Length: 280
Image (cartoon, rainbow, N blue to C red; front, top):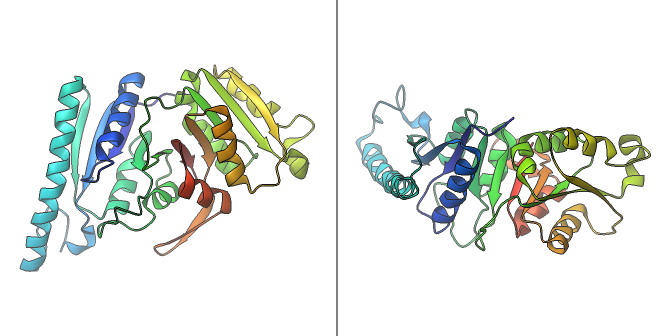
């Protein structure tokens, strides 16, 4: 498996340039096609028949023109970045839809979605409060979430993988394989393994480590006994190891537009200090 198409969310936030840079780095490293998607923020259901048609109400049409102009500005920045870096295989997409639904749909035709952690200081009327969470739970693709604070020169040289034997963790590892194969060091963390003996067996982490080794991943298993909640224990271990990527399953579900997350997922998304690859 390799990444052939990488999708990055484009907007006019202060985090857009860093997000685009990292997505471009990954596209060049993996020789992948890079897609920059800029949603307008207006739901596709506002159109009478299809997004190619103008909304019926004149006032709505005027608002759409404003939103499209904002999206075009983000796309122009993406075009300039791609030209500077000499990225030949790339494309821009103006998405006539609300941000979360538009990105989720586009992500289904990609191998990886890159977006940013929600920044409480940059609230936008065009975003639901939990875009990363919504995307992870709905797009059926791995999502690389970048912290809103900091600059990250490297992503994935020293990766930390959270393993609990679940379907979500399995999907996350599979979705991260192209990154893990390139990593200099991968640590597989198994927290409190005696509590889940029926899942881990006598050698917790050994089976998944062997699976990763067969895919060319240099991995070490770290069994961790902790009294912390798993989310904070994972973040603490990442800091101790100097990790520049966390790979983990995301747990939760949605009720209409309300995203309900598991405790570890919620903690990491709220307090991440390094990029996190999540898959539901």
